[in-house]
Image (cartoon, rainbow, N blue to C red; front, side, top):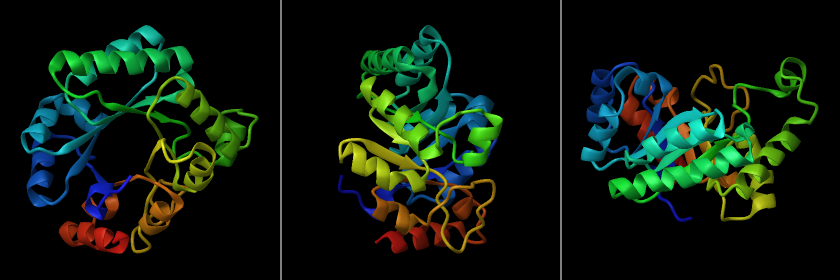
Length: 238
């Protein structure tokens, strides 16, 4: 996939009101791809998605659906009607739920006159490290093995891509080839604070490892000069 640095960076709209979100859209007009997560969507619903569509922005709807198959299908069908580009589901929901989610998202998009969104499976959240996986969640597999198992499950269900830690990109790309879409949160420039992300890489290292898209929030939105921070990341990727 050939993408410009600007196209690769998905900026996270991690705010709680529509007014704050619109202020960021105004402040960062050069950003072409925005992520809408749980906090903002629960706060203002699909209105922010309509605003992004009106501005001809690409949308990553990151709600991480995880439920029984019928409920996941209903949610993905509804989300497909918004015309988003990417949306997330949790891989541990299982193959049947993932298959139905893919089909339902396509149905919703077609009914609304939009192209089908690409579904991304979340394997292991980037806030979870090996110790948490083993001692708190009692998963007996090593973290890389568990990520690969969930990735293969998602692929078998027809999921387009994976949300993964930058540290998993290279082995996943090596195992899965170029067709799968790899989207990485947990990306931090050397000049930014890691925060609650534990498995992090720099933007340049993440793309070199094989990532398609980078989800970056606080290193841009919490910067003293967000416009300069976004441009600096794009320049580093260039």
